[in-house]
Length: 564
Ligand SMILES: Nc1ncnc2c1ncn2[C@@H]1O[C@H](COP(=O)(O)OP(=O)(O)OP(=O)(O)O)[C@@H](O)[C@H]1O
Image (tube, rainbow, N blue to C red; front, top):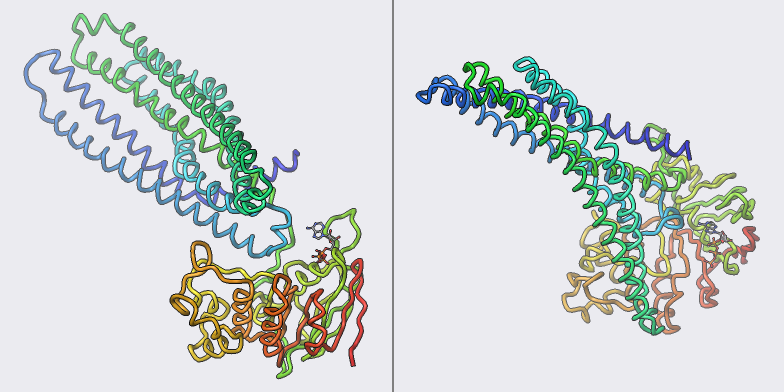
């Protein structure tokens, strides 16, 4: 627990220092704004004092100073706002980039530890909620003490008694902040957790909509969601109440200072002191809101401060899976590819998902020559998916090595590794976009001729004419729906286009009817030519696909058997 807090603090410090120059620039412009405010108020106090004393004219210099200071304040205020927006934007972009890089570096193994809705919310809402921290809280916290106490000192210099009163009232503010601010932070943290729970629930329900409707539980589920939404509403109201109390406490301190100064100096004000004396009193009175403004900005941003802790905690909760990327400075290795495919040598690899659970892969060794087609079979939970994830480079062996074309998989640069491997799973991911974009995703630089060849080899041409806009038909969410077989052909076309020498498949025909499975097998046979392949399957239809090796896996152990 203590270690977690320490790590969180150090992460927040890192964020602060990454943003230091922007924060300091904002604080500097803010300080100029405060100083300009003093000049503005002084010129206004002088104008009023002269009017009250003589009732006649006002020295031109005060009017000119007043107008110039007003214009400068507007400019400085605008600059402050612009700097805040751009600093918040830059910080969020940087954080998103860093997080996304971490997600990609950890691969799909991350989804075994975290719900996809929680990850999506971390990348979107939680990072978005940090805008206020970088744009408002950091500059306000760097500025408020200096700004507030420089106002108090200037007031004290002009009018000792008023300076004392103002300083005294300002001293109470941190106490109010400690009481209400901490309560606001706790409320805001609970609100965020409730929001996160609601998002995860919603995504689950949307994914499982068919199951919920068919089980007759739709009504009950809607009620549960309603309750979760109500909990979020109540937590949001609590945050607003706390924020209101924080702001009200600042107002009360300000009013007390104002009334106190006026009562204290009423004699000079009512019985006409000298012009400098009236000016100093009016200056002190008019400066009261200026003295409280930096603190008001700070307390308005207090909730924003809570957000960095919330987001930081969520980021800390991401599992510390080993990152898969190899340093760019590492020497480049080139796997040896031949016309037949690529050599795959798996040497004594072991893997354990959780410390006290049995090994998911236990001293696994096998060798596939270029052009070998291996069928991987085994009961559920035997370790097939773990082995595939390891070959795809998403998890690292605890022990042992995997050599691809003679090069150690773990020492390959990510781009060099992914170029060697194509993967076809049970259901291909179809992105929202056209059919063309979905296929070209595998090789964006492919020519029109290569695309046509891939369309023919994967037999997509057979159903192209049935699509409303051919290759330009919109697919994916909100787009045209494809059957399982049609979607699987997209995955096959992608593999043709990518033209990688190692093909890994995980139950590629699992959800297809026997007739479609036969059609897909025809395309797969074409795809297998000139490649090494490892196919995890339960289907007997694969037993005459031209397999040369049988890998039977059970309890994480592999038996290799060559088929002659
Ligand atoms: N993220 C994880 N955390 C803990 N244990 C895991 C995790 N993923 C897999 N396992 C365990 O590792 C073992 C191998 O699982 P794996 O998913 O590789 O089996 P499989 O042969 O692919 O099964 P199936 O055919 O049902 O997909 C199982 O005991 C499983 O419970």
